[in-house]
Length: 234
Length: 190
Image 1 (tube, rainbow over the protein chains, first blue to last red):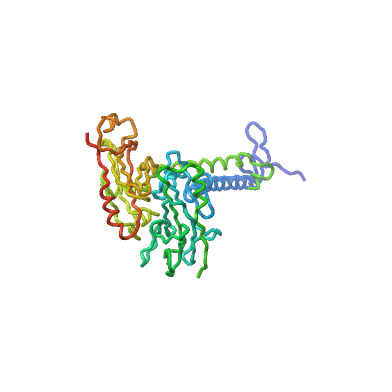
Image 2: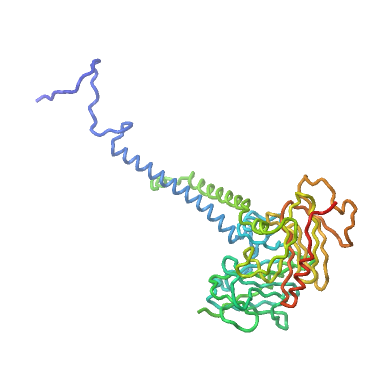
């Protein structure tokens, strides 16, 4: 039995192609179109996510290097770190940004040594729930200061009114060495109360002599930094 | 993602993303350098009378003008601006631990002097503008001899003069404050 073509024939007599049941744009089937769209959307999501991740990485690494320093800006000596070019006109952008963002008034690194520690000598975070002993050798007659703060740089309120010791106010051993203790409970000697502060920051400052220091002398000075020993935690 | 890395390494992304991260890193860092909102100068200068030396109250918990400012030192500070002419600074540094420093608004140090052990050091300093707007002569250049102390000239537009007096104990505090009070910071008179 013959099948009759019932399609309308245009005036020019040319027959239209047989109808495709599921055709979309550009002659693609709907299934192909869906695959194409899903691929494009996946590519777009990936691109946005990748760009956002790159932007985030850029911002976070910058903020971290400004706040905590990096090998480009700080020197580390055990638990102590020191902004190498703080206050200098030749300071790197990270150091300049740190000075701006932290609100600190650091002594210039070519005039003084300002060393900060957030961990003990073994690398454990300083915390007010622990007791610490800080032992330093004779620094050779230079003026020094040891101060304790909470993690944002605020002094720790205490009834004893003790926030720092200097080479003038600390009890110095006969050989010129010194011991400063940190803890919640009072103890004899150079005790700095830390009760309730949470994370701690120690700042050790030395003033250069009026004649200044050479780079070699600064390196020697850095060898005289005190060690921070944890005695126990409760 | 499978479409992107399925057949070959997408080098545009491998190279482009680190470059983008580095660019953002650099821009963020440079913006932070120019952001003076939290700077020490911004915080302190707002509390001080311009071109006048002020002895700050003892640093105590809750009364810290800046983070990490220790109570082992008493401070006298002057917020200066050389817009009205050179600033003349005088200070006495009686003993070890005393120091005087001049820092620009951006935190860079332009002058620092520490006292010598057991010897009183007199500081006489003239701060002149650090740009071409200052076309005059410093008092020294005009041949004026203010006193017998050696004088120095440094250049800065705005900033702080900071005199530090170390805490040597209660018995010394009154003397330290008296010495800090003698420090001066004012516009140099012609």
